Length: 263
Figure 1 (cartoon, helix red, strand yellow):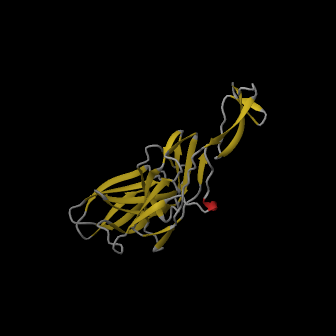
Figure 2 (cartoon, rainbow, N blue to C red):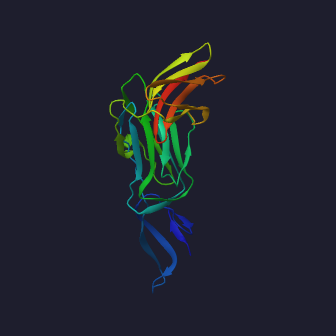
């Protein structure tokens, strides 16, 4: 006939915190005709994330694995929003891998949000995030991430000593010796263009692009490498002032450099 808890009668109990709750179940009578008090145990899953601070050198690939560690195999939650912040002057976000349960949003530069609109989240790997150290004047770039917001289960923050991202794998290059390398970028204000000096294996057909912080492609051209140091141009035209990425790609090899455009 319903459950009486804290003076209220409900058809069900929503207990967010694991523990023991004393309830009175109406309509369940003993031989004496009196109502019985029964004790039920409310179980709920807790999602814990953790965050490792790693170091990425210029050209290093950083693969971070987002895991959920729970005391149950899965839990049905209302929604989850996982926010990851990274320095755009130090890191380039390549891709989010194995993120079938998330929608990826990039609200502002240097912020990645993985949104889960509701339903089951299981224990184990939720997503993998691939980043790369940028060609800056600083040889070693710190990788710092932000906070986690989980709605409907438990709010978890890195301030509690929990970690958001674990399983960090850094794919080190030999010095700066990638097969495709951006040697330098020189602006020409008179022609509103960039001269990109690069090196790549002879005969490689390279894809040269300029992207904004949201990943939108502003410029695309192709060039064929000679095996030495070559130069390609990117016309800025009416590109707005802001932070951009110059990307040089040959199949699976790529080099990325961050630039600031002031028009």
